[in-house]
Length: 292
Image (cartoon, rainbow, N blue to C red; front, side, top):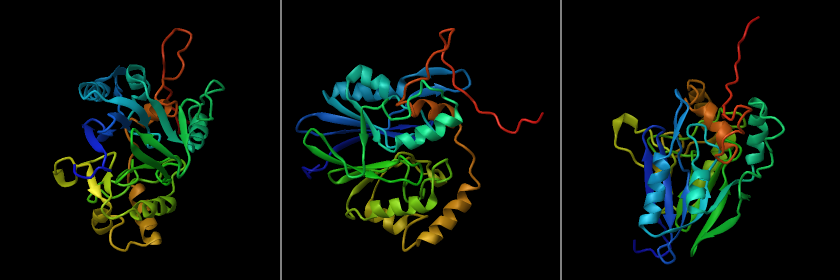
């Protein structure tokens, strides 16, 4: 890379959840950050593995990097975070938007988490507000609040790159859904406009890729390419038009297969719920539609 302000970026794709995790580092200091790590769960058996986490750990160790930050772009509904496991192995601070408290309040009630579950974001090391800055070695990073998909979504601008979480996909994949509790298609549109106001040559990295039409997996694009070609927001799509399109599409979507375990764990910064009297840990499944 000939741009000295451009961070080094390595993406790791998990085909089970279509998630891309990133290691971002400053070549001058070898300080790095991880964005959106993945913990492996076999939902049918309840078995946890650390294959994706170890890929990140191995890369960091082999390249003699020092982990400073473990960033969550939001409380994911489609995969579990490996943040605590990685922190135990490599250190670093776990960061998320301060709006996590809204997600914790919503889903604390949904899962009847009880009084032991703090709804103040204290499970995380750093709660970021819109416009807050932090450093990855000599790299300057800035947090942008991008609600719509969830209340706590946050994009991270690191020099000439931006990591957008689920707010945008690759141009042929469109945009995130906005029908989860606390989601809002109109807010999503406005958050996307905030991202598209970045310089056209800003490198953009997405959190998921579903490989439309069977193409190979991709996770890097640019602001200019999104403005031209995104199938939901490209060209001159207006707010009302986008909201109508997004809400119509969302009505056809099923829930992610890992939403039940993901939310319970990710709202706790990747930690499991407390074990019960028999020493085992359980995840709750809210049941609806019961008739007496």
